[in-house]
Image (cartoon, rainbow, N blue to C red; front, top):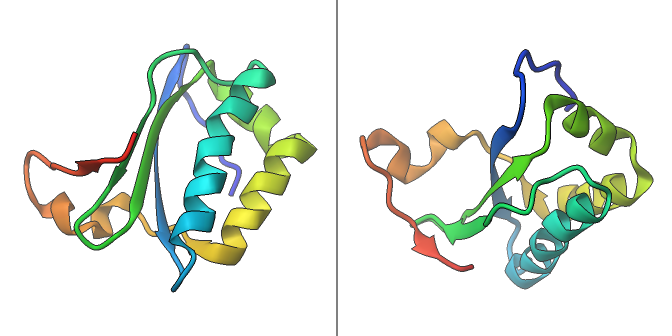
Length: 113
């Protein structure tokens, strides 16, 4: 999942997670651990993050990385890999363009946090 970004400075990230049947609460627990773990390692900024829900139940997480290098470092850190591996067991990661709201010029989502 690691990719090379040609971005200078901070990076806005929008992640979409589709929980598997009956895994919504477990996924939310991991999503809520995700950003604090990144911040503890100095990889994400302190900027306000958002967690929302699409009309079909997908979870959207929006946060800010300190840099493209921070993303690379996260892919190599065991604490973050552990969270991401647990996420893969209980969720899928569909692209944003498949969200029902993505066909609208202004997408609106239910705010969870």
